[in-house]
Structure formats: structure tokens, C-alpha cells
Amino acid sequence: MMGTVDVVYEAVGASKAAFEVMEVLGANGVFVFTGVPGRKAPIPIDTDLLMRNLVLKNQVVFGTVNAGKETYQAAIRDLEAFARRSSTTIAAGGAPPSRPTRQRRGTRSERWRKG
Image (spheres, rainbow, N blue to C red):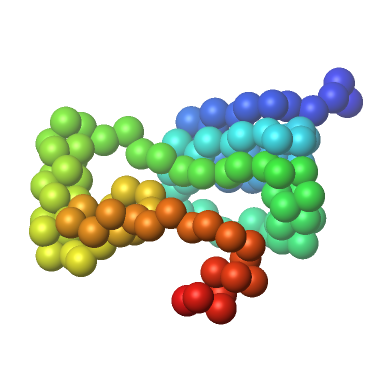
């Protein structure tokens, strides 16, 4: 073995090979799934090892799809519709745009007492 891998961009949909490569993903490594496997028999994977590596090695695994322009436009419309119906914003902080977030002062225990 030569070492570990920092970034994997999987694009062929070969799940068995992908999960074998995931075993050599290094600390702070990123694994991107873009391929879609065909319908085959399930493959055995060591889920404990997978989860342990993800947590202890601070690894990131995510999937994405290469969609067309129409799909992105539909996603924007959906997010806009959600924002209109929701009392919170999608952005970080979660405060509605009409209500500014308050700054917190004092120690944590003082904030808890004050509410």
C-alpha cells in the first residue's frame, strides 16, 4: 500500500470498488459519490469500520447528481416557496428576516438564568 487518499471523486457506480477505496481514505479526506450503481445483489461492508473511520478520521462522504439547468431552476423555485411558507429562514441562524438575532453577553450560566 502506498498511503492514504485525500479526495475521491467516484463517477462509475461500482459500489464494491468504491467502498474498498473508502477504506484508504485518509484523515480529513473527502469522498464524493456521483455514480449510480446498477441493480445488483447487495455487497457486504463493515459498517462499524466505516462509521469509526468517518468519525475518528473526520472524513466527509456525500453524494451528488449531475442535473440539468431545469432541475436547478426547479430547486430554486422550491426553496423560494419554502421560504415564503416558513417562519424561519434557510440561512444560518434560523431567525426570521424581520427579527434580528440578539447578541448574547455574559457567561453561559448567566444567559440560562436570564432566559
